[in-house]
Length: 193
Image (cartoon, rainbow, N blue to C red; front, side, top):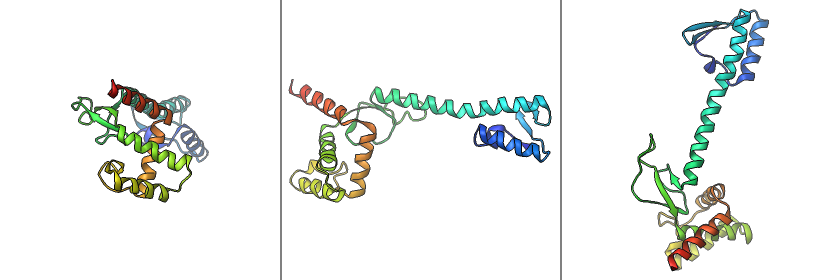
């Protein structure tokens, strides 16, 4: 069997070793064409050893890339920088767009949006403390919005169950409620100085 690259032939290391064992039982050898200009033939002992080592590195590379990406995203979040064109609910973009790699056109500093944080805290309270259903929370938010439009969604639209649920779940993934309380308290105290 001729394969161009090891990392394209198998899902992970275990899959590669299992497939190789099945092929060996069937007396089939694998030949990898793109291995640094050399060929890798699994019919030989050295080929089998190099196949196992190369398979390990093929599985290591995407894991390393994912780790670096995750680390970079966590660093940007700690610096309150967003790569998204639209900031997450509870935040807003400030300042000019900052240069960066491919996502440079969206790389911008974030700050707390106190009105949206207030809405998130109210939604959280109604849903998780008062134990209201999503439709009941939507009704309450829309009732408040009739008196004060700042309770509407960012787009100035009324809340619906799907949008409210997704907004709350995304906020719960990004923040703990204690973080939001601290940030909004710090923001409110800085406005009164």
